[in-house]
Image 1 (spheres, one colour):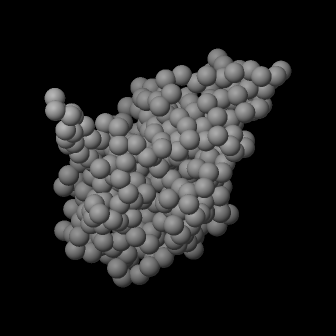
Image 2 (tube, one colour):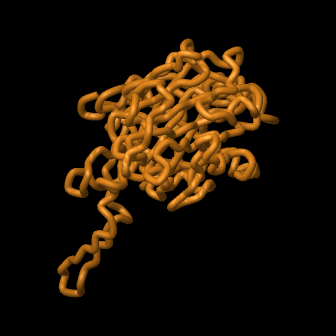
Length: 364
């Protein structure tokens, strides 16, 4: 959308980070399958590690030795711990799938064994049928194709950078994410090979997105702040000096901050985007769960789907200022950010009707 106009926001919270923050172990639940030449699995890191795939630091790249094993497959297995928790999007931040000549294959199931085989061969179409899952490109997921056996779906980004794809809401517990080469054939073909550049990815996210029930009040404040990015000092004589510690987003040919498309510093806008929003007259059912004793995955509301999943301002998330922004040039409406609020303040203005204020700040 032109001029980054603010409409109805959407929040993409990460279920993996939430589970890790609440005591679920990374090892055994969010894993990279070990290298096995007979099965064509390639699990060799040249930089990074398994925990760093999910550390919500997109510029902290995890690199795989795909140039030395061009027909290898990087398989990441995910146990979301629940057969009722909802998943409706998947995102990959700071990847080089185009430069490394790769693509993404997704599969899922209700049993742990559904996601352990190459190309999702063990997946059960009784659990999920990808032809009916209605994948939608939000950011840089230009081509999505269901496999002919309907056990997996392939995503082919158009450029290096960040990718978000949504799909029909699913509750499968186990998810497989396979990165594979794409030189021999495109689409769902399984015999592609990697290029000469090693594949990397900065962060993997999966979970349920949440849309506010309506747009914020008209008095939205959007800021582009250099606060804490530069150190402005003044001499006794009144002359000022500035030390720019960072201009904000990283933009290079080998690493990009989320939703940055440039390849060098002068190609990118500087500063930190901040959105200060008020939402008036929100129904209580859109804010709070039916009961506050135990989270219910079937209950859709802001506290359940957003505030609790981020532990307030603890865990970053993807934020869109317009839920309808999808496809080409949609990067402008998305930031990787976190809440600046220390608390969620809900002001009752009528029976069962509340006003809520939220501030979202961009993360680097």
